[in-house]
Length: 83
Image (cartoon, rainbow, N blue to C red; front, side, top):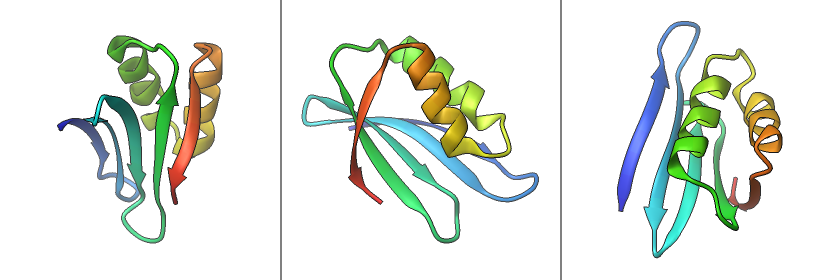
């Protein structure tokens, strides 16, 4: 299982990462307080496109809505599996 994460310390704790588990790619988000969410990537998506989407979303104040917007721009489908 591989991880590569982004952290934000200023203004709070946000952790967002890609992980590869059992042949599937997953996105994991944790706000350090109340929310932990996991989504499974559906279909074909390159790690580069996913990493760029996560990095752009991570720079925003509201990470999860920004993540949805970035994935939608790239036509990347996800399925919620936890959170």
